[in-house]
Length: 93
Ligand SMILES: [Zn+2]
Image (cartoon, rainbow, N blue to C red):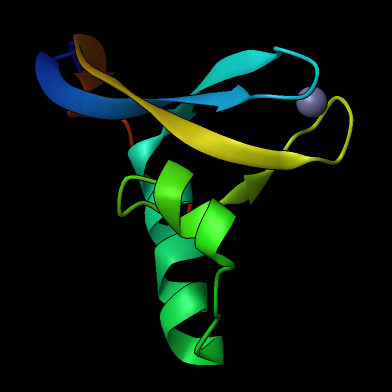
C-alpha cells in the first residue's frame, strides 16, 4: 500500500509563569495550568491576600527552581504547528 500522508494541525496555548523569588520563568502549557485550576476547585484551595493580589485569577503553581510560589505573569502565547500522519499505517492496537 502506498503511504497516504495527511497533515494534522494543532494549536497549543501557553501561559508565562514567573517566580518572584528567583526570577525563573517558563511557558506553561495551558492544559497543565487548567489541571491546577481544576485541583484548586476540587480542594477549595484558599489563597492568601498576597497570593490573591498576584495571581491574576490564575492558579498559583510551584517554582520548579526554588519551590516558591509560581505566578502567571500576564503574558500568553499560542503556538501553531502540524505533523504528518500516514493514513494507511495500521493503528498500534
Ligand atoms: Zn523560584
